[in-house]
Image (cartoon, rainbow, N blue to C red; front, side):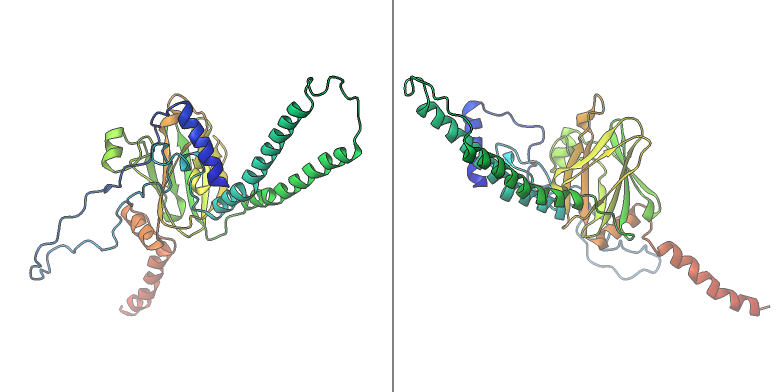
Length: 335
């Protein structure tokens, strides 16, 4: 039913006015974000003075997947472009299910019922068919039906709605990875207090740079917000100047970033990928030019990214000093 409804709407839009290409069209086939390393040459004899080869687990920016975590253009898929993006968080999947299975059918049924009643009234009770108007009032059965039926519909909708609302306010667990997103005019800054206070400044790429990296124009950035996939995240938002909003549609995540206030919300991304969003609060002249790119990596690759940024994984800072006291007894007995 959902696809049939969307197809009718899409056909109507196509018949009325051709849509121009949106600024957030789906990306072209993905191109490498970073240049690949040159092919290895024939191995030479080991040299103890030569520097060690880079680790195989070194961080490499993930290539975006066309249509995943990004808007879908009308030209590529007229039906899908009218619908929500595919969801990659548990709350997003639940919300999308609620829309497709409950809200859309109920809205469609009510609209068709009202349309049928209007057409019936127009044909059955027009002046030509009824020269003398009826003065009948107070039909008890009709009044009971139109009171009870809406109550039942609202109760059916209320149960999943309240469930979704409660799920969106779950408290992050103690071991959640903390990322603080700060909105500036007009870019984003990401801080990682659990990983040595890493700070990443993220600005939008121009059209040529976005095309070169195979990413959608006005959504690609130079430095992404990198997080581990499948791990609870504690996303904190604030702002340095005016109110911004951190929003990523494919993760069903949106939270205001207010100056002088720290908001917090739980997010768990179900699988690795590149997910695009934008500031969704009117924040000034360049409001439309501060996109958000969340890159979810497997935990091992996320650890490699942390080290590439000069940070440390939780527990590493405590492990190093713990080895020093073990050597002290031997030094004391030497004298």
